[in-house]
Amino acid sequence: MSLSDVRQIVERIQAEETWKHRRQFLQVIKHWEAVVGNNVAVQTRPSGIYRQVLQVAVSSSVWSQALVFQRRSILAKLNPLLIGSAPPLADIHFSTAKWASLPPKVTKTEVVDSAKAAEPTELMQKHPSFVRSPQPVIKTPASPPETAIEAFLRWSNAVKQSTAHLPRCPCCSCATPIGELQRWQMCRTCARQRFFYFNTTPEEESPAPSNRLPKDPR
Image 1 (cartoon, one colour):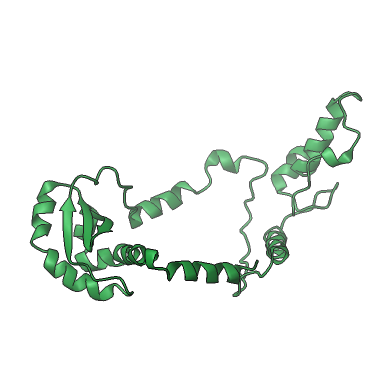
Image 2 (cartoon, one colour):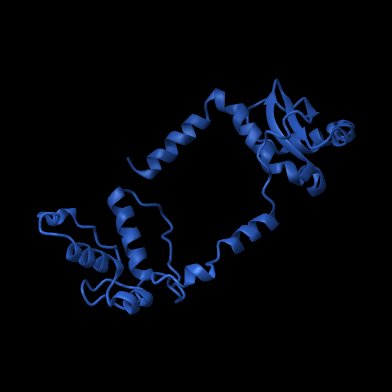
């Protein structure tokens, strides 16, 4: 089954009656910050829709009382943005009950901080398999793969492009980080196989080569 078939199945499921309110709630989440503003959005999180009433968790009772008087103006801005056959929202209920149980909202600052945390540390850079060379830009095809084989071929070509600048292992001719060549004079896969089989006794060695670790797709 192709990915286009999966997309058509998802579209049919979303068109069913039971998905109307779910789609409406997803649209509420999408437009909530634009409707109420960033300051209010930080202190509130929509938690569901029950009988055309939007349930919103708030951080404190002070915010709950303040927003009760603004719920009509919020509905006037929010309902026109909710596209679909589900009935429009009739009211908004603010409560502090579900605030602690809802997952925290990820801010742009937290996204930047997480990206910085994902940068390689000094310990990672000392690892022999760490690649210091910049990665080339890989063009992604506009259309999704039709079959699993096509998806594998695209992945294989992407791996080859991303490792084309690396030197080759003298044993298997695979692209190899410089640190591995400096430490073992070969890639980590060849080193693992050679050192493992070199240190085992004939009784421990496996007669079938199929038990050996597969090569990296580089």
